[in-house]
Length: 128
Ligand code: I3S
Image (cartoon, rainbow, N blue to C red):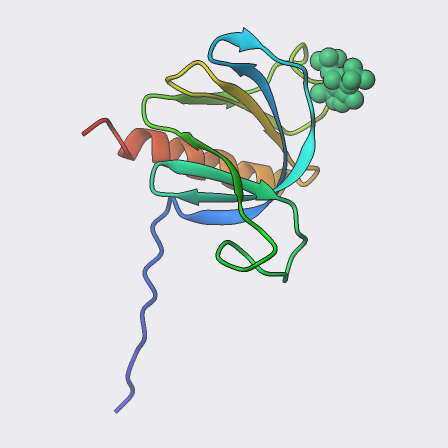
């Protein structure tokens, strides 16, 4: 008899490499600093680590650690307008603490998947 193994991934759990910059921190505008970041969506948290490239060690490994984390509960996302960035495929993430980030990928399939996952997260993780 066959045994099936089901790996249950929540729709809001996702990881990959994205370009990211903060644009506002606690309501204050900050200078853009685009960096390539290993990005993890886990529960309501969006976690960024320094880009290590695909296939190298991840959190818990010796080479990569979380740099910055935002809680998406109470936040919102939208496609960034042209005045926010000249890049294409840019999502603007606003947190409840008035920190704003831009995340971007050159690949529209990749960024569309992130958009969906972030939307799912924001709509399913309400404040407890
Ligand atoms: O919105 P801005 O200020 O035109 O953003 C650009 C600048 O941050 C620029 O850096 P410097 O002003 O430090 O040279 C960056 O290199 C650009 O990437 C920023 O614009 P985009 O449109 O790429 O988000």
